[in-house]
Image 1 (cartoon, rainbow, N blue to C red):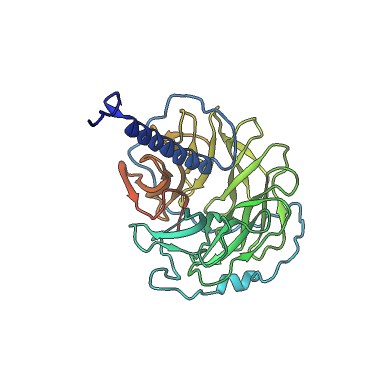
Image 2: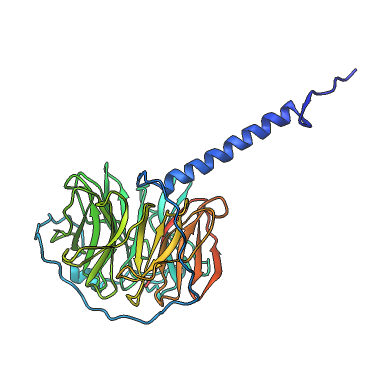
Length: 372
């Protein structure tokens, strides 16, 4: 005589065990994704405030291309071959491929993606085609935080190769070696090219805490721009090269600051009890977009460089972050886990309901940067 399996809540014991294992697996995937997303390791607890009014339209006028020459500190860095000279870097032309053209023309998005245990810099066209791993021919360097050169031919990023994170550049076609620009025992992260392509601003821990530095594109002429016991990090140039927006904890929380390109006239523009970080300047110079945790999760806000007209532009119960402007200023790209994993999305600033998912190969795609 065949025995009847014991059931609980209408399920057999075997079915209950399988369901339990499935729940644990899904929870593990979510936890890993969250840990990678918050890799900087800050512990602020977001506070709740009333969201600002959502606008229907933003100005998208274009700005000039003036350059800036920071001059304080004048600390000299050692040259690390085979870094190119400023002239060589400006005139080099990588050999492009059909999928990865040597000129980006505002059509490409660079981002960090984790595939089969590797953390690499990938690029994809804004319409979701031409997915290419540009650091895949290198040993796994846990590459992160890509930033475009103004001519769209090179990408700077930080990578972990010899016991710490340093700044590297690589040609867009991915055929060459990663060129190492910094070589310090402490971490150097979050590089950004100046609008004239001659300098790179970045965050470094080489003096005991996170500060903002600038150097030539060949790694020479290192200059320290900030000097504070609290952390300063995630710098980005204004489109005319005269100012730098960055994040600082000098008031006890991560807030948005602006300073002149030589480190002078430093001032607070956005302050909240929640975490504000990952800023990007609009091509017109009229707006700064950033990620904020002020309402129990990450959403994207926009503000004038003087701190006025703070406006929330995404409102989702999961996390939207790391926004980057398109070169025409009419769209942004950002990462979000709104479908349960981190993927890339674009948003039309003329119509904030127009959110488009950009399909990739991974369940962990973050830190997008729109090409010039």
